[in-house]
Amino acid sequence: MAEVVRCSRCRRRLRRDTGWNVTMSGGRPAGYLCPRCQTPDEHAEAEINEATTDYGVDRHGRLIGFPKAVNP
Ligand SMILES: [Zn+2]
Image (cartoon, rainbow, N blue to C red; front, top):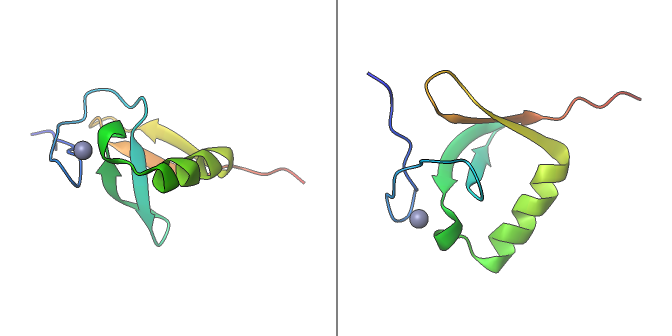
């Protein structure tokens, strides 16, 4: 049974990854925030994270984030 991803605040179900934030803890996804629940600060932080983190969806439909590979 596939795990359903929900917003950590409003419990809305994740349907598309567009605009969603993944909250990271210790390098692992700790929660998810839908676009409606993100504060401006969180959105700005997400922009920064987007520049340094790659996101994908695993085969269970969950969002995953990992550091972008940097080639010196
Ligand atoms: Zn929400």
